[in-house]
Image 1 (cartoon, rainbow, N blue to C red):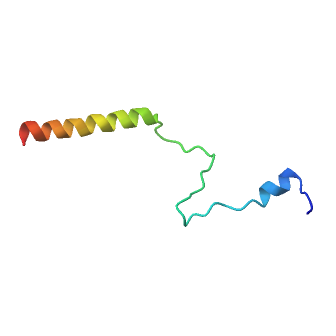
Image 2: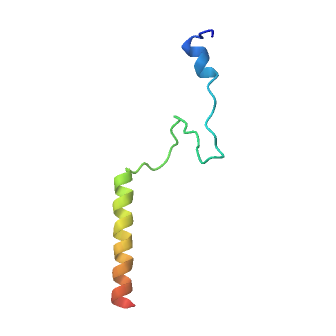
Image 3: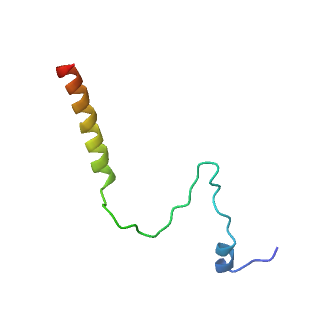
Amino acid sequence: MIKMPKRERKKEAPMPITGAGLIRFFEEEIHGIKIKPVYVIISSIILIISVILAHLIFG
């Protein structure tokens, strides 16, 4: 087996299978609002609790 330099091996590496639910993430940054995942989870939990409380109080 002939060993190739690392640069050539990276170019020939296969892409992930997209049909199996895997996608390729690019390192390019997209401009827009950037929110930490913790804030999204906390706000989702607060929204769920407020909907449940509103259902119990007004329902």
